[in-house]
Length: 206
Ligand code: SF4
Image (tube, rainbow, N blue to C red):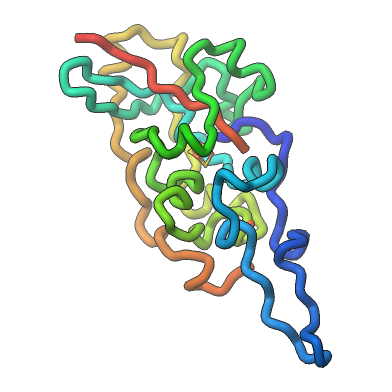
């Protein structure tokens, strides 16, 4: 989910960091490494940071926290601002004002949030991993997120204001914290060609 479509990812060919057409003697130069392999999260500019969000929408699903154990579980119910059709936030610019517990991702937050999906680019890079082959910055195609089974598109039961607390408990699912079969390869392995999110765990006390 990313929420909104305001910032589209920059394809590798458009990435100034990646452009390196010729070596000093005119020979073809090896392409420079893409920015996400060379730039720490904390050093990225806004465009680079926003382009990391693949728009999967997983972090916009309502999460329940067990008060006793602290365990956090996903539901297949989305934030009330979520656009189920477009798979994004309907008011990304004002999400924090609209949804009080919406979490703005920052490098500091990414380092501490335990509930980011394992497929999330921010989490992957924070853990020193590479982007997978289906990430739009690698594939050059945002549809590859759906094709790889990462997007929540078609899997959202509804928005949170349609469910009571006890109904939410009936909506617990595991797929948002799992990798779909065959989705783990990286762009480096396949050799193919590249927002922030408000994510919030809702809490359930029991
Ligand atoms: S912040 Fe991560 S989990 Fe949320 S939509 Fe973007 S890539 Fe997906």
